[in-house]
Length: 161
Image (tube, helix red, strand yellow):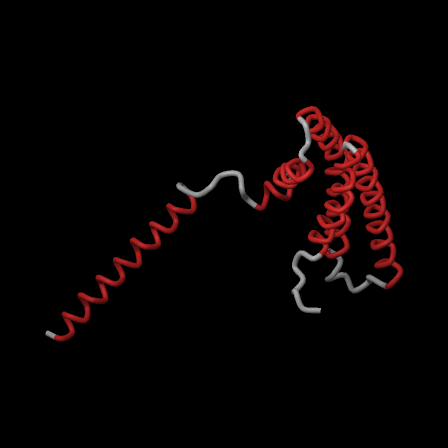
């Protein structure tokens, strides 16, 4: 009889955990917030909104920022895709015993050239964005953009040095 009592408690606990898991999944997928995902922030949706709020942009400035951003991403997305493909090609050669130092250097030189182009385009983009700002906004812009890139560069690194 003691075994039957233990089994009842086990089944009760199992049922409770099952219902708790369903409630947790529902809270994430059905009742969760929309639009705050990592993907949105990677596409710049949150970043530009945050920049707009920090700089107190007017509607005209926001529209100009949005137009420049759209044009910028039309150029950058294919370039980022090329960089990703080049890196995929490089790491796809891991099982190639014939990969010597000059071959590796050739791959990394192409990747470096594309990264250099991407960095130059990004810098020019921010110069154009800065031109839209008032002198007061430019001062704030000049501190926000380096902070933003510093955050991006520290992603995945530990806080300890």
